[in-house]
Amino acid sequence: MTMPGGWQLVLVLGVLVLLFGSNKLPEVARSLGRSARVLKAEARSLREDEDAAAQVPAAQLPAAQLPAAQEPIGPEPAPQRSATAPATAAEPARETTAG
Image 1: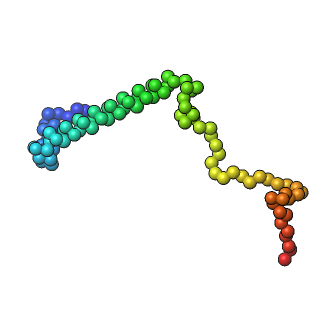
Image 2: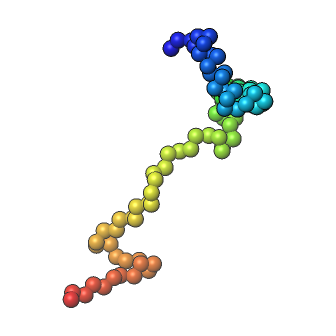
Image 3: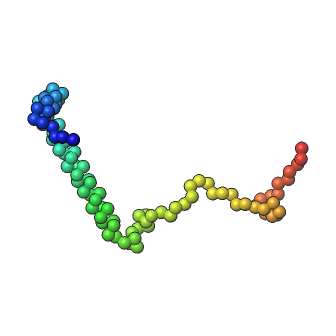
């Protein structure tokens, strides 16, 4: 991609003046500058946090920050009972009637 030439920059500035007016342009530029500074500071903070976390051994991490064990997703399967196993007191035998 090529850099814009002089006449292209003049055209862009002219469109910006028409859209925002000459009074609003400094305010818009200041706002963009603040946003860029905040974004840069947050990116730096994230990078420092990642570097600090990489230097801490896993034994010193609190349990909440340790990787969670993979557990199956979904309901637990019902325990299988053989057809010949007797019913327990908690599970009364079901009587089936042929109709």
